[in-house]
Length: 273
Length: 251
Ligand SMILES: Nc1ncnc2c1ncn2[C@@H]1O[C@H](COP(=O)(O)OP(=O)(O)O)[C@@H](O)[C@H]1O
Ligand SMILES: [Mg+2]
Image (tube, rainbow over all chains, first blue to last red; front, side, top):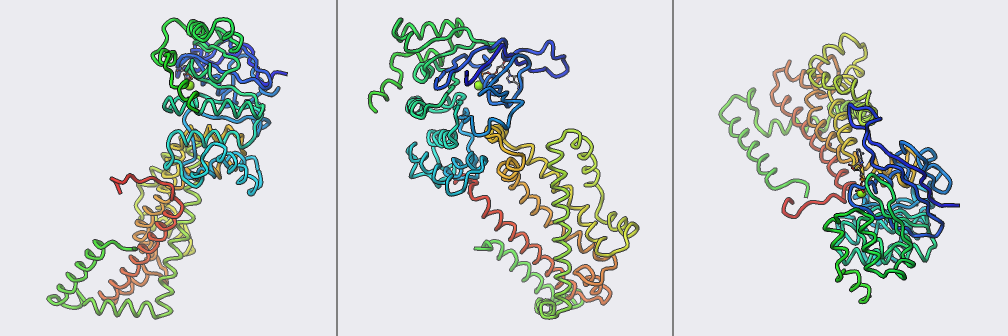
């Protein structure tokens, strides 16, 4: 069974005062499937419909057309059924400012009715694992951007979801922190055997994290798909970058060009670590 | 420290100016600070007088509690349900324009029980501030945090308890502080409506006896009560909003 499946999904956003028929598409004819244990990177330029797809996936909005299935359920219509099954890391940390780091990590467990002692223990373990043992009792405003995003990753993992979904989780971080964290994210997903999806506009990030890469183009549809290991073996790193860039659309944005640079910080951090 | 240096100085200057005036003007206009102090001492040591202070305090708290519950619920509903917003918002704006004195007159005509009249007057005059503050706080709640919370698929109650309530709490404190400042003025007017106890009733008695020292003493007692209540709200606020960031430059 596919863990995640999109079948000919479209999403239109009605413009005020106009009919739904002429409403512009944010996602149109989107189809793909993700198997259990896969870690898939979805890459596309800003505005191509990544977040719209993401919101459809977590059930925050309903498709205008087509079908979305997560673990065989409709994430929008059967919203409550997926409680505890899906963990989400958002763009920006989205920590509750009135809770300490520890209490933020406990948040999901609390909503899932875990016992107090259990959730404190689990939250502590995750903060430990992410190198935040000295910062557990600090409020978000007293943490750096990188630490905050670590807390939000811990929050998503703490509920031990089957599926982990991330929407540009590192785009607000500096390149070194981003590289460190995406390696860590990949390691955590892989060692726990979870199914994961990471949405990003960075080709570098997609290649670092994904087993497989889906390339999205506006309005939200898949234009290419790569098995990272196979493609790397066949055409090498530069070849894969070239092909992804082509699939994303002709003119690459400055950020994409950055990610292509030979001296990408990720490489340096990897060898230093 | 409970009071700032400047606050103490300002109060001392007012007291000194009053004392100075009392030397040059007849005591029935400007009684000396000592006479007023003695009056306050009398209030503080007489059961009947203390009963009046307690009655007024209880009326203030009961009225504001009622306004908070009703107004808060209306504010949340306005923030959440479009049509409620469309109908209730103008009604509350209309209510805000009605003077406290009009409510006094209406409540005398409409209701028989004195306590209910006073409660009703306080509710009607403090309700809009509670409702509007709650409405604004609800609407300015972070959409990002709402989505984050929803991603755990919580029940409505958990959503309210863990996200909505902490988001609107700072606004609730603001509304209490604003309303406490206004309510003292309203309650004495309301108590003129045939109450047989309370600060308003006592002020009426002092006026009939032409007793300036007594009127001053009762006024000060009311001011002290409101100030203390404000302090309590501030302390609770401080304890529950520890996470709020203050820029060092703004501190
Ligand atoms: N709520 C919305 N209402 C109207 N248009 C929207 C809404 N959300 C997204 N869009 C439009 O859909 C397109 C895709 O947006 P989005 O999914 O946020 O892209 P990405 O995440 O890839 O940057 C954009 O053109 C955007 O303006
Ligand atoms: Mg986006």
